[in-house]
Length: 148
Image 1 (tube, helix red, strand yellow):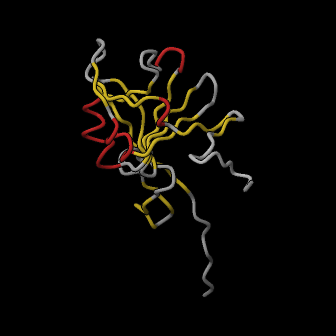
Image 2: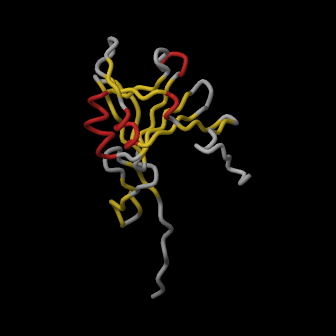
């Protein structure tokens, strides 16, 4: 009798604890695209993926004006982001610009505010690395990525 190998098929996904159903080998962990939604007061404010908290925003609406900063819900930060992520990425959907800050830096420099949307932590824009849409923040000593 000849053994015929069956091609693996992806039958479905489960949102929580995402797994792939493949032929007879079910419940194989699938880690590359696991996204865990983060909620605050019943609304999704972002998601965790690969130890990164990603927060999509509309910059003109969500960026703080005074002081110029990005904010994160305080309870969500303490409960989900700080213990599970190493980086925060704010993605401005209007400009495709990404703002990166390590969770360690955010936690060390954060200040607190409540302007009617619940308690939030914020860090001013000068502590975020800007990437995307042709922008890249220069290093601390004025060097770019081109090695000059």
